[in-house]
Length: 409
Length: 224
Ligand SMILES: Nc1ncnc2c1ncn2[C@@H]1O[C@H](COP(=O)(O)OP(=O)(O)OP(=O)(O)O)[C@@H](O)[C@H]1O
Ligand SMILES: [Mg+2]
Image: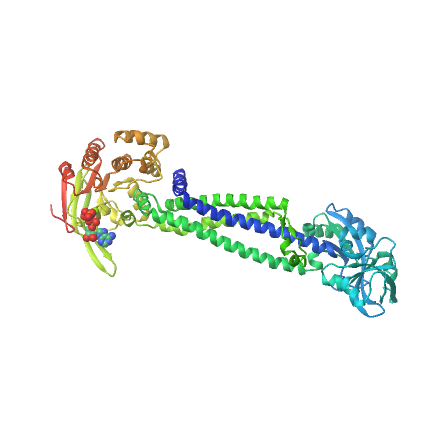
């Protein structure tokens, strides 16, 4: 029985090939574009997350509880060798690097300014951040460079110093004594990120241990992952593995929420595009099906006169839009996944816009990244819409009065 | 024996701003089982209106239509669909067929709705299509057949479902006179062979010659 309604619906699609094709194309291109845009955004976002986290903060940090809110020297990670060991056992972890972090005053003979200083182990730090690659002039620290410092370009300008010049740092040590040290500028970082270029100084971990009297007491442990997009999941795993109420395991978005806010904001645009595509799809299918129903008024009249029930008429019309929706969705999946896949290999070169993009942690070549969650959301919504919009035409057809319908040729 | 009894049947169309067009006035009529009746009358006399009411395609303004004991003016929506499916067959002036179904599928359609098993459906459809002389065209779609052939398929579709009565509104009006005569002869034969009641409307003197009985309408009333 159902077969006949399916057959009628299918043949009606074939009967009006041109119109069906236009509808299917509209659905296909709309959905395809949507999937592609989502993959593109996903690729760009992952790139931004990678870049953003690779500057300083890393994908995941382990800190002593309270440090994130109120970073003080006395809030350090206790028993750090054991903690490091546990973290290294997680298979998603690529590298770990402990740091000492403090605030203080950096001065030259000309002037002085407030700064954040971090003590890093040069070998390990190269694996968790790209600070070393941002050195525009001079060199990054090596093991044993305990009298050297890396500073940002703006700080160098403000202090009026250059490579090899001596600058002095002053602060308070953990034991309350005055911490002060003199360092020679070994490298100048130019990252494009104001906080780094203006307010960050990097010394070696051992220099920091001595300066702040923090032997074996890192303020934070930066954890690098094989894939930054897993930061939430790994943070949770580490939290459980460490099982230590004195520690906080923070994914990057908790360490520095700014980027996540920007990404959320960016995603709302994609949702807006989704809604627009849905409206186009809805109007397209509705138009096709409604036109098809209206031009077959007489035929519906005859179907009703022959004893076809209202709900059977509704079935017939609904099948039609479901078919259009299914084919359109299939076309959209092919277009969307195909283009996303193709460009994920070749990359999309946006070098024309690079200037603007760099400041947002983007690179000039974007590799779209297919996130199937969004693929299923888009296709599912398109399919649902195609069924939903058939309600009105189907209902219209089922309510036709056979006498009137048959008279209209 | 009376198959259909029409009692005090009236139908008034209300169009636009309460403009009333009386199309049937107080009709009383009996149609016997196995009858072959023509409704005749000038254009606008009410033939189509009466056929539509007999087939429950429309509701009367007043009066009753009894099929045996059942008053079809009082059926609900479900029952109306059932009645149309099982008790009556329709043949319209033209374009009777479902365009997306072949001749065979068109003939099978009603039996499908009735739930006749597939094998029986196919047998009965093939038989009747052969009987109406369409065996060569059973897999043709309506637009691949002539008007006369389409009307034959429509007759086959109506009769194969074994209704009590077949209602045909000017079934020959779109055909040339030879084709029209052939179609009418076919229906007459089927009326005898299958003992199905036929009620027509027509302007055609040829049709009036062949029917057993003529009911003449004028301005919505029966005049003879
Ligand atoms: N849907 C309608 N709305 C309003 N008036 C109608 C409607 N259908 C028919 N009429 C009117 O009812 C009267 C009877 O019409 P009907 O169609 O039954 O005549 P008919 O005998 O079938 O005519 P014809 O030979 O031209 O087919 C006419 O006056 C017609 O104008
Ligand atoms: Mg008429």
